[in-house]
Image (cartoon, rainbow, N blue to C red; front, side):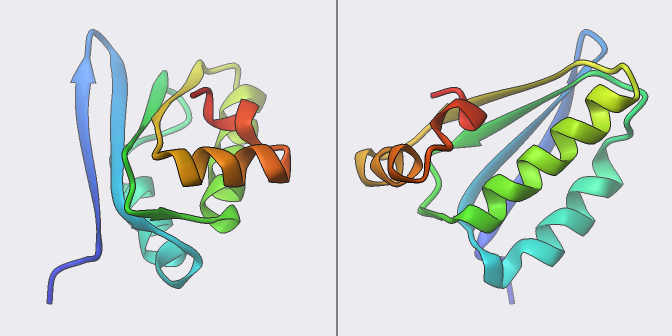
Length: 103
């Protein structure tokens, strides 16, 4: 059975770009986190790209914030780029988390 989400990573000039799409929700957050950890380390600069997810919830945003704090504590660069559907943008605004996803 295939995952209801997609994670892909590419090294772009020394920065790992990790792209997330699909169902980025609490039901899958443990697997998403495990897969993400296999792709990156806090010693390297990272950019998360949230690419038009089908669904996204607060659990995923909390994971992004957690990783961001871990990277910053190690002195590594961490950035987020997002492309979200309007309903997901509104969810982020209503929860006060829109700045965390930089859309």
